[in-house]
Length: 73
Image (cartoon, rainbow, N blue to C red; front, side, top):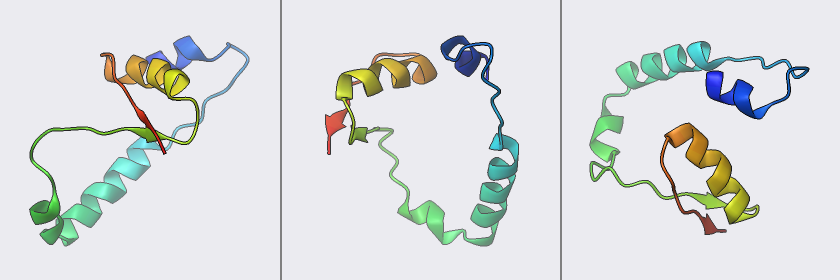
């Protein structure tokens, strides 16, 4: 949330559902242990955007705390 507040003007109210989504995801994963077998373990991330990759990269880098390079879809 602090990173979002840095990006958006003060007059914008940000509503979050992160905690609810995280709880639901945890519940789902606990009920579906087979998902663990399908996950990639290489720790690689690939980002694709339908928008301008430079704009996406600039914004996404704020959240990941490191520079990244996306591809165009």
